[in-house]
Amino acid sequence: MITLTTANFDEQVLQSDKPVLVDFWAEWCPPCHMVAPVLEEIEAEHGLTVAKINTDENPAIQARYGVLSLPTLLLFENGQPVRQIVGAKPKRLLERDLGLA
Image (cartoon, rainbow, N blue to C red; front, side, top):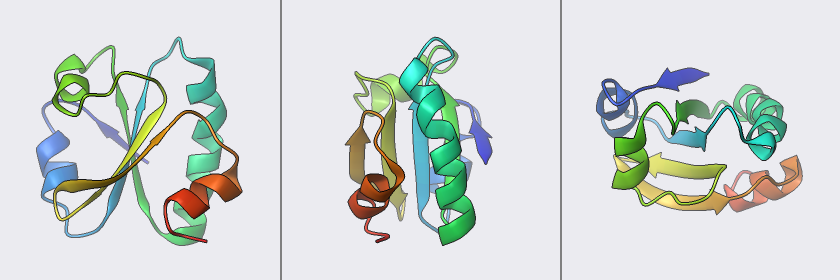
């Protein structure tokens, strides 16, 4: 899983030639910690690149994409957000919402 910052976001996400699922999270967010192991499973099972960005440490990226609730997952393809999932969900629902199931 990739750790994103304001400094590497554009290179790791917007310039990626593969889809990237970005997990907007914060240390103080219990649902964020609940969804983290599920995202690791999805990454391993589906080969989807998953990247995490701490919104407390990188508020400019959070503001750029209008993220108001945590966790928020944004799926980027060709540098553009194409799907958004807000809140922690079970694995099968995340897979469905991401078009993986």
